Amino acid sequence: MSLLSIESVTKEYDGIRALERVSLKVEKRSIKGLIGPNGAGKSTLFHLISGVEKPDSGKIYFKEREITSMPSHEISALGMGRTFQTLQIWGNMTVVENVMAGMNRRLKGGLFSYGLWLPWIRRSEREALKEAKEILNSLGLLGKWESMASQLPYGKQKLLELGRALAMKPELLLLDEPASGLTFTEMRQLSEKILLIRQEGVTVFIVEHHMGMVMEIADEIAVLHNGELIAEGTPEAVRRHPQVIEAYLKGKGADA
Amino acid sequence: MVETKKSEFRKRDLLYLVPLWFLSLIAPDPYLYHKKGFKKKDLFYLGAICLAPLIWSDQHFHHLMVLAGIYAILSLGLSLFMGYAGQISLGHAAFFGIGAYTTAILTIQYALPTFVAFWASSVSAAVIAYLIGRPILKLKGYFLALATLGFGEIFQVIIRESTDLTGGVIGIFGIPWFSLMGFSFDTYLKQYYLAWGVLIGLFIFSKNLVRSKVGRALSAVAASEDAASSVGINVPRIKLEIFVLGAAFAGLAGSLFACFMSIANPEAFSLGLTVLIVMMVILGGMGNLYGPIAGAILLTWLMDILSKYQEYSLPIYSVILILLLLFFPDGIGTRLNVRIIYLIGYWAKKKKRDEGKL
Image (cartoon, rainbow over all chains, first blue to last red):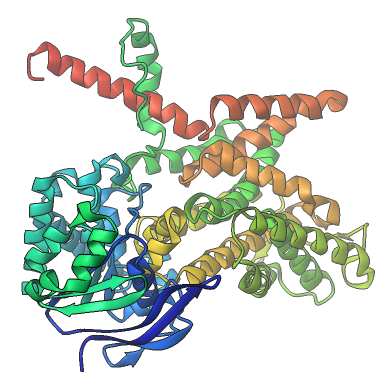
């Protein structure tokens, strides 16, 4: 069975269909792209997968467990990391603390063992710091590890958000428009990084507006239009798909 | 964070540098978040706390500092909930009251030793906080503030009306001194060391929380709950945990208060006290554990000074608070430190610049 499978999911907002019986599968160790014009329901689908919202009907399975009605922190704890379309880093913490907070679930121990600073807490905290620095190093953010996250430039904050998601050692990484607002070089770095992440055995599911980038790195692409899945397949096949061309020309042609 | 507007360096700033440098040695540094462990400064504070009542050995000062210590325990718990987790609670005085009444009832009606009542107070405050917190912590922002405010008022009414148990409006008198294995804390000096000893213990506990996984989770919840749950932080649970912990602190403080003042009456735990604690947390500086203690000392002292001008005390008090909030919106500790760090940073860079390194 595939890592993530969505089975005929429907979602309505005040009578407006955001998603109409969408079924999707994401295979292990693949990079799957999800594209579509504005308002196609891409972000809605992501919210449903990560548990921020619940579908009206349909089922979602992750690692062969039904996660349709699980609260979002439990879904994350199963091994699903995500980044947000609108940047959601924690500006009140330092860069390294942001990444360490991403490891929160993996660090064991409750309130009292931390308050009393039991011997093994010291060790696990030190190891967490070391690991966080390694993650920052791989993202090229190590030079800024002590500064406040809110003081980083936008592109670096996006990378930091990715780093935070990686810190929880996810099996599936949901990236919601990772390239939006990035410069061309930053986008190249990001693509390389995503390919590297996949090599380490992480499955990546990207929602992206920027077709060029997804076409380049994705193994398979799904296209949403008006809440319906209109095409699915390899990047080449999707690019030639008549309905996709029509949707993109009708919608925002500039995106393609 | 450092003030960038006044980047021009004035010679007379040098004059401030000497006292500020000295202050910077002892004042906590709120912006160096990565160095949250214990430092040499903490030893200095510890020494100051131990020696202060011996140097100023007057009864009035001791009494004030006992009160300040109790308030500091209260505001320490609240600052974890408000300053770190970013939630609002206006019902904190109720937990203080629960602690005080638990001690009063257990020691007088059941004749239990104060030491047992001390821990029982903490537990009872925590249990009630858990029962209250489970439903109302789902609320956010002002709604949470209102719900906790309502809880505080309901507590007042219950205390006033259940005369058999709590003595109603008059309260309970004659609570015995706090005693431990035959040693009775019957002077202000002994009480000072007990209150501040408890405070130091709780401070170390809180500091350990804040500098580790728990502190990061709290800051994460304060900044963005969506992002926090996206990395697997159980947001409702950590909020509840810290709410209960703050209540347990308040219960301990209430128990000490009841033992030291030997009275528990509803007046002492009214909305006025809640406002006072919240002011301590805000004035001292949010998101910083030294702040609430500084705020507690400052406000206790301020109230004492103003009590001499009985009829004018309230207007003067409010004017001072407004001025403080106008000029130190992030809390006194924080703003002072920003200035110090800015000046020292400038000074260090100026040297380098002169040497041609920058």
